[in-house]
Length: 397
Image (cartoon, helix red, strand yellow):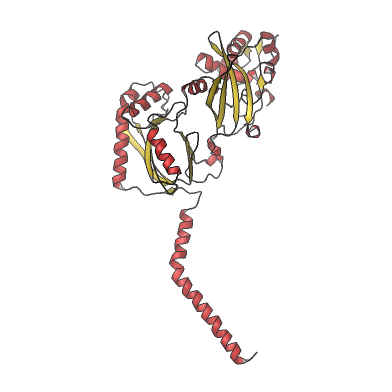
């Protein structure tokens, strides 16, 4: 190759290099911005937003207003005997109603009560789901006595959440404990009417970042059935709703593990576990089970392993050693229909907060009313059988 050609090639390389350096200098600010954006948008980190003093004052004013509306109810309520406040659901509902009496949207934190004045929240969330600019908010009352405020703003499908909580101190003065504002990592408003957002990407179930709120109301009959006969049993440490059974196959039910839950439903109090460590007396066990099942004494003795020599049914309290360690979904009755034979079919969908799902699996429960009591007559898994919570009878541990 001739020297002139080499010289020309070197000049070209230098020019390209200089152009690259120039481009780098011009874009250095953008590159730095990209790095900053990347850091700020780390999906595992909460994207906090600074709150102006004016906005902070507005939030404080609104939560003080809500507190003033339900203060008298809180003062007169039974708060339990422990240092941690525990309000009964009736008190929580009354406080929710007091806030709603002024046209404010309000709900309770136990998923057992419809949101009051939900219409505006529903409309704004539907707009938000379409990418429109929207703004709304609602209050939440918890059994621990906290008053929470959730302010929601959305634009271009991005949701910004402003959160504040407050509680009454020993002098019955409302104190604001926390105020924060953040951009949700992900969110959706489901067809069923659940508002779900993830504050930041959850690394695992132990560090779950989901929040769930039912906005659209459930039918009153669904609420009634769910609160009385489905949620008290749920899926924890019993298999009533985890297997397919009917009146001819009740042997599939683990009645010994179910007893705890039915006892509380019947008497409205927990078992005195210290008195029944050796087992449950025959008459007491059968009385509780037969309140909710049309089952003969002979069948129950067989299915629940009655010890005729001791006159007891075996039973063990729930402990860390005899249950499957896992997060639990909770059931919601979304529809109920009366059948021609007089039974009712309850359509149940499992809500799993840690999975971010308002329908993790489905099952139907059949019940009938007899002599003033409601009796379980069957359960059938309709969808998601492979996603059912793990279960193992306590006797097998």
